Length: 79
Image: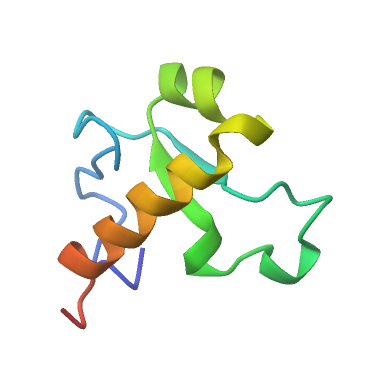
């Protein structure tokens, strides 16, 4: 939340749809990349439906990482 300057009361958008995010997904599963456990580069905000569809599925890791990298570049406080 700090990277994007969000407060707890703020609307946090899904990085895929822009709808209200309710889940923070680990792009690379925690079991495979424990070194990235709480690293901003591995955490993407998603809706529950998006998390169910894309989260923890190997075939979506690259897709989610690309979306997240672009979102960080365009929306991070250092942009």
